[in-house]
Length: 275
Ligand code: KIV
Image 1 (cartoon, rainbow, N blue to C red):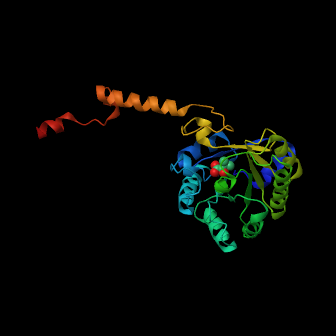
Image 2 (tube, rainbow, N blue to C red):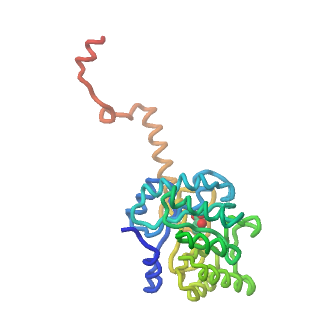
């Protein structure tokens, strides 16, 4: 049975930590789902790790829907969160509603995520009123990278910490079911986690958040452009994949692949008739 929002809130109450992972395609979503990951984020990070953009800003709603559909075909149990890309919820409540709706209606997600605090609560309220669960995202918000001056911790000063807390409370009051905290100092993330009733999900925000989220390419060691400080490589699949590719090339060159076992056979007498 698919993981529900009330289950995640129950987990917070019980002090049961949970994991969220990104996925962008059918096969990965299926694998993650089979492993038991309860929440899958189709993150706009796909712009960088799948599409090779240098930030998440160029990602379009159509690209997001395309990948969300693939993930939804693979994940039968996890709660799927579609990440609303830059400029799809900033222009008006109507645009925000229409674009959020696409993630459920076309993409097959069960919820959406958007970045920002007090500034986006009106949009959040309307999306939730339409029956679409919303996850918030505070701290370092990559869609505002140019305003923030690149990836850096948010909330270190008294003023910034107080603003982050206000944003978290505003999102909670607007009705979000969870809040991602990205690059937030661990003691502040702990305070936010204590102050809000909905689960916090950390990425570079210490161990006291209710859940953790990682980009699957970072976790598996598949992205070589850079390894963020908040990531841990549980595997080095890029090396494994490179070895497999070079082994394949070498075997083709040497005539060692394919073998008879890799091709269909036929009745040789039919060939004799053609000769
Ligand atoms: O797009 C993404 O993958 C994200 C996570 C890093 C939270 O927003």
